[in-house]
Amino acid sequence: MPTRYSMKAVTRLTGLSADRLRVWESRHGVVSPARTGTGRRYYSEKDVSRLKLLAELLQLGHSIGGICALSDRELLALQTKSGSSANHDLEVADISELMSAVADFRLDALRASLAKVKHLLSPQDFAFRLVPQVMAGVGERVEEGKFNIAQEHAVSDLLRHQLRQIYDDLQPLNERKKFTVVLGAPEGHMHDFGVLLVAIRCRFHGLETHFLGPNLPHESLVNAAKELKASALVLGVSAIPPEEVKVEIDAYLKAVDASLPRKISLWLGGSGAGAIQRKKLERDVWIFASIDELEQKLKTGSFGA
Image 1 (cartoon, rainbow, N blue to C red):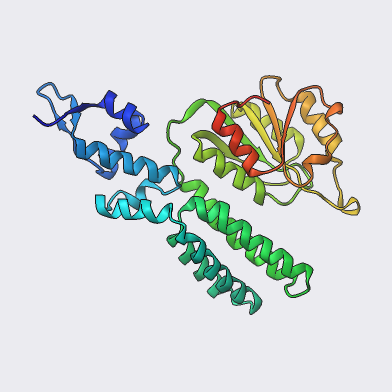
Image 2: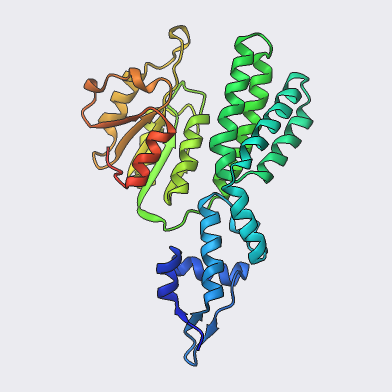
């Protein structure tokens, strides 16, 4: 007699919640479990294998709407491609194509190239491998005088749009509903690129996230953190030249510290985070130097400061 799995067993085997399973079945038709005479679902080995594949691909950043109609064979091929070292050669070729489009200010070609590579790479590889390489390459060319600031801004804007789509589409598994992360950049800090990547990484790990964007006055930021019942407040702090500073970061953080409930952890990242004077703050603050350092914290599940 074929093995039959209850919903409880399937949630344990796949990491998917019962609510997620029901939504996937009713809205996307990913599997069609049989039912007992009393209406209880039971799943076959084939159903469980397919659900495991879908769960793994979602962990890589694919959206269920984009993969639900694929056959099991197509899902396996996508899984292999998403984890393949062949992506490296793909990235090299596509970065060259992107840089050529930027150099000639061919924004339509740049937009088309980004859309193509986003389709070919997994969302995780696009966000955390390709995007940093593109931004580093553009930054080097700006310093060398080969690109100008307008070209850099055009690339940043298009990449941010693609990353925002990944963030919005990403459906985290095993949502840790008791831990909510609110993310943004302080007042006077106009760059939110890095903190958007942090928001995406948090969603990959199943955290409930709310991305607020750049240039946030401390009163608005703290109010949002309270209203959204944040467990942690994450700020992307840029290194700003002294002559361009509008709001002194230590004073800003002191104001946040004074009005933010103690139960909310404060995490700081970005190029300017290392210069922050922790001794001026009453609470413990966690400062992370890179996405990789954040990744280690998220993996261990130690979410306090």
